[in-house]
Amino acid sequence: MNLFKVALLQIAPCGNLNDNLKKGIEFCRKAKEKGSDIALFPEMFSCGYDIYNRPFEVWEKDAIPKDDEFVKAFSKLAAELDMAIGITFLEKHSPLPRNTLTLFDRHGKEVFTYAKIHTCDFGVENNLSPGDDFYVGDLDTKSGVVKVGAMICYDREFPESARILMLKGAEIILVPNACPMEINRLSQLRGRAYENMTGIATCNYPEPVPDCNGHSSAFDGVAYLPELSCSRDTCIMEADGSEGIFLAEFDMDMIRDYRNREVHGNAYRKVSKYTLITENTVNAPFIRANRRKEI
Image 1 (cartoon, helix red, strand yellow):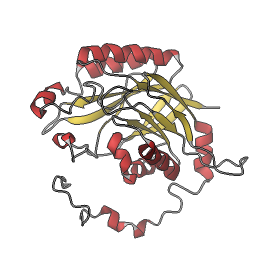
Image 2: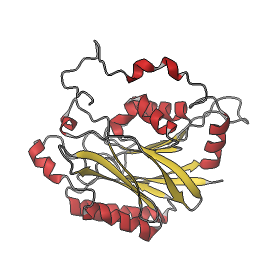
Image 3: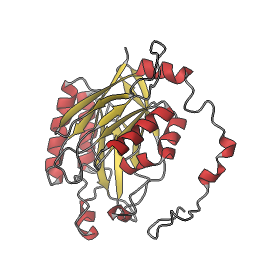
């Protein structure tokens, strides 16, 4: 069995960058002790997603560049531990900060940097610059290459996010998160995994971090197995609300075999009928005054 082990670091932030760094390093070391191939942080861990109930002019100062020592520390740590790390941070960027994930492989090499595309423009994230693309990279593991993509929190609410990652070859999608993971949001992740035959690993903040409840989760997307007479539960792990490291083990051989023979994903799509999806027009009842138009 070829297992890809994802450590979901469901941990609370400390209130400042330096303490978050120390805690992040500590938990990455613990993740390595559990045999993890990768450690994933919740959304915007550098500042603990502390952008609500503070003026933009205040929390904007928490933004750090991609080459900040905080980020580089996890590159060095990845190489030291021989374990990939997906570190999240409020990125200093022009004209506005970004909500960012940088994925380092087990050699400390950057695989990609992804900034959240579907910013929550109905709230304070209207003060963030959206990302410019979805990325999939080859993540070198001791068991071979795994094709990994990423989306962040609200991205999951748009089927197109996971779909474009699947079309770019993603086998596993990493999802940093910062919101209550209740049945409907978990159902969205289940659906994204099912319809794309793609594994999805989501890391959330624990209770009692404001507006968060833990329940980090993993879905492998494998709904049917030949030896079973009915469909199976694609949820392979769901955490409780507590702080800790929760390990999701993806059976890559099973996922790849399933993707090679099942009917979902890309085999039977009718792309010529989907042109309306790419139009940039919004009609009632979905018109919102604070919507940002795409360039």
